[in-house]
Image 1 (cartoon, one colour):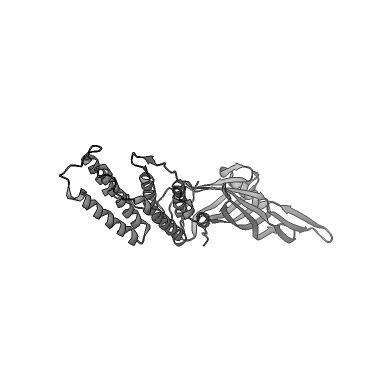
Image 2 (tube, rainbow, N blue to C red; image 1 turned 135 degrees about the vertical axis):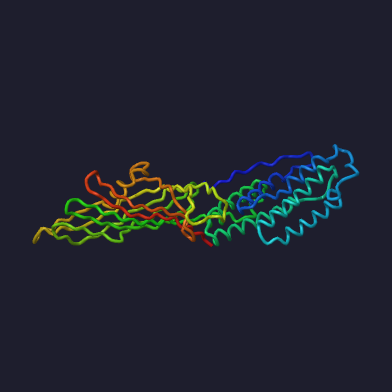
Length: 356
């Protein structure tokens, strides 16, 4: 999860060319920003191939004015100014594409060594876009920008520029909190147990997976029976996130409320919540009792998501907006152990909580 494939560069007789990697980078920027790679670049490249002179020969004397040496140098200089003055990643991507296109035309037309070096502007564009995505991660609360940052970081390492970027910003962008609140009402004849609990689990990357755990704490527990009861209390359990997976199959910054997400969350009841109460049967006849009603209710009504005992894989989330990246709610009824009817109201939310 959270991976973007990289591509290796290719060599030319003139030198090892970074242009393919630059194109990978600019395409990555375009995808993350919701942009298309400028259509003019492939068209110019095609024209250049058609007009290219054979190796070691002069270029044709009659060329479109836009492809003369002077015109290409002017176009290159204008693109440099455009890149330097660009105030957004998308604008720098467009200018960088223009620089690459000019150099490509120059080489294909057989003009020889030009001194043009679009690769030298790569670190500027790379660091600018990396920082812009980090800012947008916080501003728009969209983890897809963190995924784009990881793609840029990997490209930077391939090019030997990994030290330019603060790698910790990726993990600072991709931090989350799972908030779960669930209520289960169980009935057996004249006995009614109502248990209501919640957990807030910080979810961070541990080097292998996105995980976290936190107490499952009681909001309220009541027990109604034909005989008096007293001294109700609840021992907290432990709720854990064992995995988090998403392909982030949308363009960063384009999320809309209600949008379906491919998110998958591994959930585990690492230790059970224990409900306690005392049945007052008469003078000197208190009978302490314990139950596992919250865990029993969740287990019975989530059989369809269970991967092994006390472990579930949750899917079918929708985007909410703001800090609430994803939500799924359950209103279910069933039976506990095939005997006691049980009703559930549960909300599971994944909050995006990037760090400064």
